Amino acid sequence: MTTTHAPAPPIGKAAVGALGALAVSTGALESVVTPTLPLLQRELDMSPAEGALLSIVLLVTGALITPIAGTLGDRYGGKRVVVRLMAVVCAGGLVSALAPNLPVLLLGQVLQGAMVGALPLSFILVRAHLPAGESKVAIGVVSGLFVGGAMAGTLAAGPVAEGLSRHWMFALPTFAVIGATVLVHRLMPHDPPRRTDGAGIDWPGLVLLSGTLVTLMLVLGLGADLVAQPLVLLGLVVLLAAFGAGWVAVERRAASPMVDLRMLTRPAVGKSCLLTFLICVGTSAATYLVPQLFAVPADTYGFGASATAIGFFLLPGALAASMAGPISGIGVRRLGSRAVVTAGVLLMAVGLLGLAAAHTEIWHLVVGKALVALANGLCVTAMVTRTATSVGLGDTGIATGLVLVTRVIGFAVGVQVTGAILTAGTPSGSEIPAESAFVAGFVLAAAVTALSLLVVRTMSKGVKE
Image (cartoon, one colour):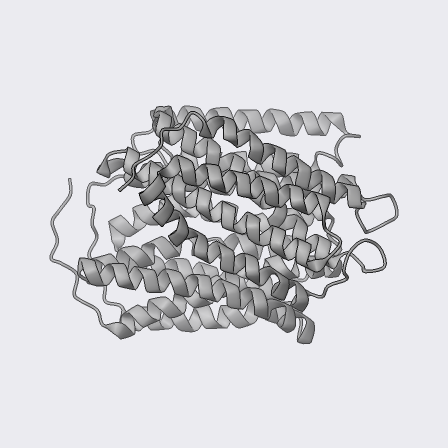
């Protein structure tokens, strides 16, 4: 049963500013690993596969937290849940800052993954406290500030890590998150719960999906090292199959499933999820391999770039990604989703093949990474838009949530596979992967991306306005 509550009290610019400060600080904290991953691998003696795991664990835990955060926000109010989630994020940031080794750093990143669920709740808070017109503006401002914070984190992480230490690159944005959380707690009024129907959280589904994702990451990340131990590898594969089958069975029978798999039987949703998975596998190759290639010593085939330089080189890609959303929205309205996705897939394939063929100059990598980032933004935005408009209003959150969870899984699989390729391509006694391993990673990603064109051909053109 759903109870009608009095409308939430209106808020002023100060409260919106507090949410904006939270978006900036979380965006910065989320983005510090990518440009400094080669540095972290050196300092913590990580293999490329372990580095790949570090780069995705935050997103994987975020994909698990987000649907739970939405349910709790409906039940207890968005502000209360946001503040508690950010307490977890702050704890994770401090654990990451103090981490002496990889296992502790992974724990910190797992805790930081709670921030992925906090941003959608910020949008819910804005909508609860502001009229429709003002809320759209406020959501745009908060979204833009999150992207701006991510860019700032990308640029600042390297100088902080090299000038102070890797510990401070986590600590400084964490202090900013703590301050912003205090502001949100003081300035944002409480919003009433929106649901009192007693709908529970799908804990069995959460546990089984967590087990599925963790086991999948282990299989992909350790597969090359476990070839000499076939029984261990076989055991992991069997465990993965058991977790996956159990999760599907539970979700099909749950009254309030974490992920409504029945939605995948709808052609528009199923195709969108498949496309998103394939596209994000391709995107992840550039996201992971390009910083690694920048860091390869200059006396071999790389550039010996520092963490500071890597952050600067990645900035054009971040700018391209920030522009992709608006461009995709305009393209979908004028040309339809299929045209936008086709253009994005072709652009990504060209970028990945270009990186495989030409990576001897810094600008080769900068341009290739920017093309892939732009293409990914075009495709994913078009997929979310297409999915949202192909289902009923009451199913929008479930359907788009499926696409976003698929995005994280595709990215995680792609990063782990490319990390395993680099690990397998590293000669015995050396810490530098063979150049052919990078080429193989880019070519494989381009092939997976090109395969998605077979799915695109079966799509309807999509709604044009």
